[in-house]
Image 1 (cartoon, one colour):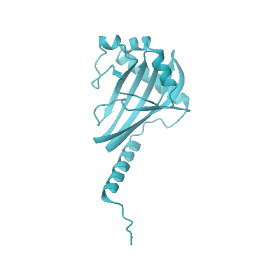
Image 2 (cartoon, rainbow, N blue to C red; image 1 turned 30 degrees about the vertical axis):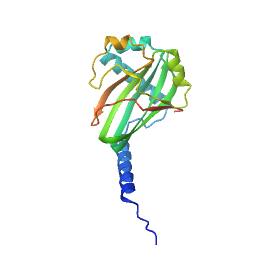
Image 3 (cartoon, one colour; image 1 turned 90 degrees about the horizontal axis):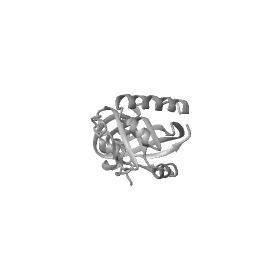
Image 4 (cartoon, one colour; image 1 turned 90 degrees about the vertical axis):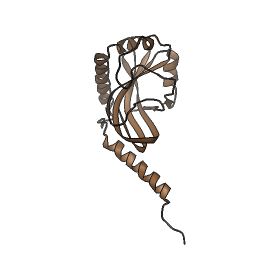
Length: 190
């Protein structure tokens, strides 16, 4: 006679995953409408906040060939975690595509956090690589222009030769260390 009971380790993993999904759902990222107009309005608001709070980012904007703006990323975890958000790719100040971002995390973590980020593409090659990829993943080679403490831009960042510069800002919540490393970006149709 076989037992239909789930082994304890599988049950624990299932419960941790279920708890993480519940935490992520509880941290509603307030983007219920999938409409392009809603995403564009949030992108505009996010950029206005970024430029007024961190004026040095206008130099990055002016030097970049494109920007991926993710207005609100919601991250939650309880052992196993994840994040999700939607945003727009702007080239020449005009939205050309919409993207979702997802990230899975494993390890010691508990809590939830929301934040925004902008990826500044500093070369045409980096922008083309992003746009032509079916699912682009942010790697460890990204340069971060602002720390988690919201410091001002440094001179090194503004003269950096990095093809992609990430600015993470507006963190609120209980998980420390917002990062885009390991985040996968996928084109969506809002």
